[in-house]
Amino acid sequence: MKVKEIIDKFREDLAMHYSAEELEQIIFLVFESEMNFKRTDLVLEADRKLHIHESLRFNEMLGLLIQHTPIQYVLGHAWFDGMKFKVNKDVLIPRQETEELVQWIETSIDKDSSIAFGKCLDIGTGSGCIAISLKKRLPHLAVLALDISESALKVAGENAKHLGKTISLFQADILKWEKFSPDSSLAKAEEFEIIVSNPPYVLQEEKKRMESRVTDFEPHSALFVPDSDPLLFYKKIASYAVRSLKPEGYLYFEINEAKGSDMIQLLSEMGFVQVEIKNDMQNKPRMIRGRKP
Image 1: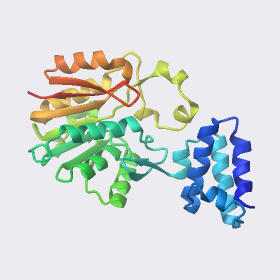
Image 2 (image 1 turned 90 degrees about the horizontal axis):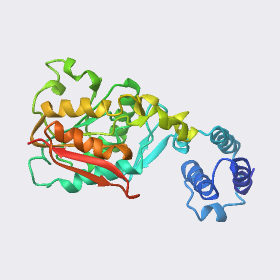
Image 3 (image 1 turned 45 degrees about the horizontal axis):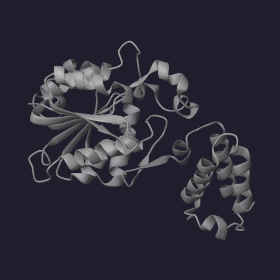
């Protein structure tokens, strides 16, 4: 089978599942991943005959895509902040809005300040994309990351090792932070200069409007919160931050775009100052920060 024949098969079999633009991007990504192709190679190498193992692999990937498996899970990686992160069904796929959160943290911090040389805690680290990217951007920062999922922490650890960034990983349930062991570094008061989290914030009632590529494959524990308590994780994390941030320390969140005003009220009522919402590139309110007095 030749390259052009595989490309034609992808186009034919996936035309009902993806827009034309998405489909061409997927074709490029699979050939880039499997054969290190550039976009021009899709044309220049069109008559190249594939080895049997290459044909089998492309057909395997095509089968997964027909089942709506996200392309990042098919490839086994996703790009975030210029780095290639391993991803699987144990972790959320890193997204551009989260990359903007990392960028905001970096630009907010004076790199010669004590904050840049202090400690940061990433709560619900998943693939480790926030923690590792912050370590890249602020190399003097000591970065700790926690997650409730042992499987997610394994992925984060592999990413940190592969990308050459030293972070500390902990398994813990932030909803039960009051029960953290007294000898745990996570239990110490006024420990961190920065706490950041992209916690579950999608309401159950929003699930029906989401693509099956998200709801059928990405871990629900990292996505959804009960409709009856949409700020569940924010309240718990902010409560923990009141205790664990040093004075003048920052708390950063990625948020549900519909909950901006509620989040401003929550952080203000909990005593945070300089509370600020930031819009993402689509001009949606997706990030918030507050400072502990």
